[in-house]
Length: 130
Picture 1 (spheres, rainbow, N blue to C red):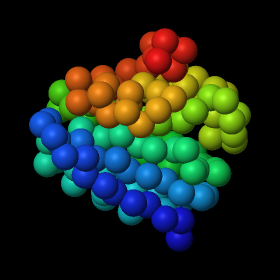
Picture 2 (spheres, rainbow, N blue to C red):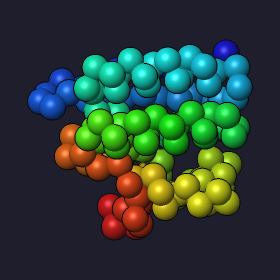
Picture 3 (cartoon, one colour):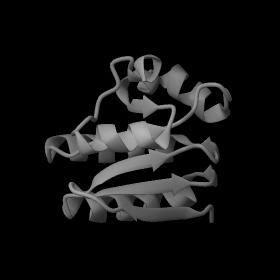
Picture 4 (cartoon, one colour):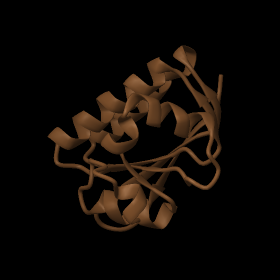
């Protein structure tokens, strides 16, 4: 199973960095969903770090979309870190599905954390403005 690490970033409001490393598919999506649900239920803002992610399938993508919607309904920030300079399969999937503009994607972890703490959940071309 591909690694999923959760690191709490101290400060108020609380935020967590959920790093997905390697390939993520149906087999890891359940664990990812559980981790994200706990964080959102506890009122923690979430940053999903995709910098070391090689591949995500449609199940993982659906899990991320559902968690983003849940965070939005709870008034919590939910952002992503994914540098555009290294165009990966993950970038390609987000562009093909149109979710690259739905998600709030930032080039750096610091920018993603700041946006998540501010309640950002939607992209609206955030990546190009970041």
